[in-house]
Image (cartoon, rainbow, N blue to C red; front, side, top):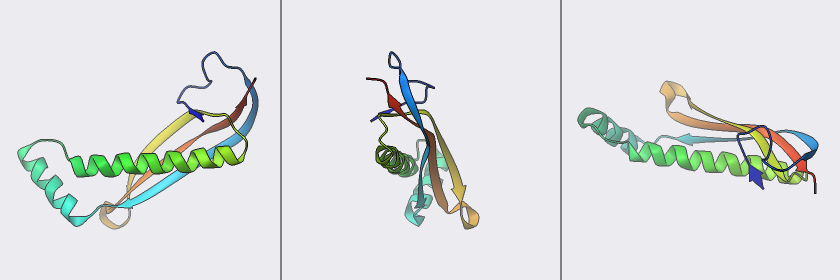
Length: 107
C-alpha cells in the first residue's frame, strides 16, 4: 500500500477514488513517563518516552487507516494528514488521528 501526503502518487495515474479513510489511536500517558519528562524539561533534553508514545500512536493509526483502505480495494492512500492532540482530563491521553483518500491506481 502506497501512503503519501501528496495529492497523487508520482508517475502513477489514479483510476478511481474510493473514499476517505481514517485511523485513530488514543494512548495513555503513564505517570513515570510524565515524571521523567518533567525532569528533562527542567534540565533540558528530549522527552524520549513521549516521543516513543507518539511514534507508536502514529504507526497504530496509520495501520488502521491502511487496513480500511485495503478493505475497499485501494492501492494507495493520498493526501494523508496526521494530527496529534492531548485529550482527556488534564490532557492525560494522547490521540493521533490520520485521514486520507483511498484510491485505485491505473495499471
